[in-house]
Length: 472
Image (tube, rainbow, N blue to C red):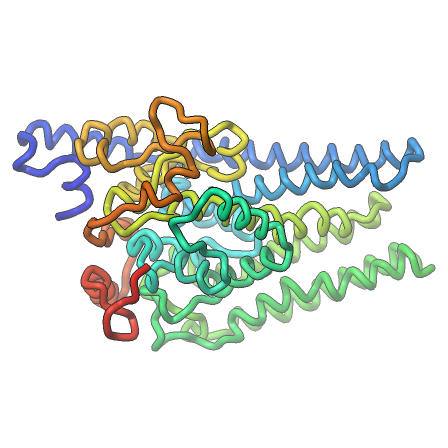
């Protein structure tokens, strides 16, 4: 039975006209456009711009007042929290694009997601798509769900169910910067670099590893080359303008060389998968280099024009949150959405009633309505609340779909709290493993049979290595 039939009623449960009406309603909820999400992206960029401007202004005011640099610490802390939350917002935009619903036009969907969200946080929409759609189709499968596998590999998954005090200790442990960096590196390996256990990986068409390594070396290496050159102009007695020009010349020459490499790399040199890209791998690689070149060039020029440590602000207000608060919010979200859940259709995730800050920082772009999203992954985030209200007409959804509110000892309207659902009282049992093949309804597949084999094995609990899977 399809997820659609299960969620809205089967032929035996409702009459034909009612079934047709429900089908039409789901179709209406799936509709998206080419305008709405520009407003949501614009809001995230407005928050980031205001945070950066306010932080720099407060730094200047503290210096002008002759106060100790210690006064900058609380300002920096608030800025890093807000910037990490906003980076998570960009992740929400990429998430929408992964499901082909950021915008209705597929090329606009891909390009807007890459240039406005993915490239700024050093990834691509296509790379995340391979990671995330596998999570949806094989949700909570201990081997085929990349989220589950990656969190266990990096040591960030918890042994659910978990007691309240243990949860608090686990959250406190995540404040360790080493663990957060470890999470980001594991995320990159599973997403940007890919792993063979991903059901969409095509191990026969891996391409050359240099297709990825060259891009990583450019993205990470160029700042390490340029910043010392510019520092010679700012602190070493050399003319700042000359040093900025030298750094920019090195950047442009390197970008040209890398672009020639990607332009001349044969198609089979790029890593392939069972899902075809909307934008060619070559165009995406070239676009990413172009974006980073423009960004790094703007930072170089800003050092000279504003006579200010613009690169320092970038590291403090972008790179530092990228490796601290951003992954912290992602880890918390993954625990809350799927921790102590099973592979059942209605029990693999939950719905959350949260305050505006938690919605912005931890549950961006409709991720508080995560169970409806897993049932119908092609419904855009701004319609998920309506989808939830619609699905409440289904008796099984009402019975099994958990609505979570508050942290602990503050139950409202009879809803369990976060502490409750992660504890033993709410550990689901006896539900059949759900594999959501409808996840790929908008994807262009080149090996549907290979994916279908994974789906069949997952339903039967067969490991990717053969034999029976270990329990989650």
